[in-house]
Image (tube, rainbow, N blue to C red):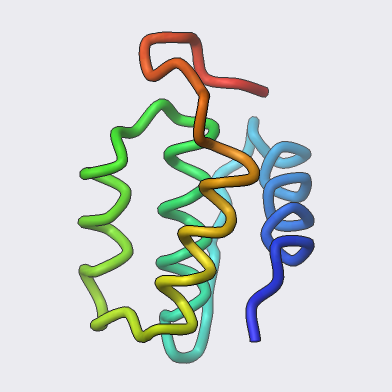
Length: 88
């Protein structure tokens, strides 16, 4: 049951460790691929297409995870200028 607050905590953690190499792991790959896709779109300047490719690279997203991606994007990403510098 992914929550936007979970993703926001993930972003804060990766931001805190941005100068280090970080290994992110999830037993089933659902959370890790979805969270990393959103993070890359939010912080690394990835296109939505590239982020979606990562999210779909390990498994077929189900309705729960598709809704999660859509909700996070609506609250955190939509309206972000794709040509702007990545936000920190």
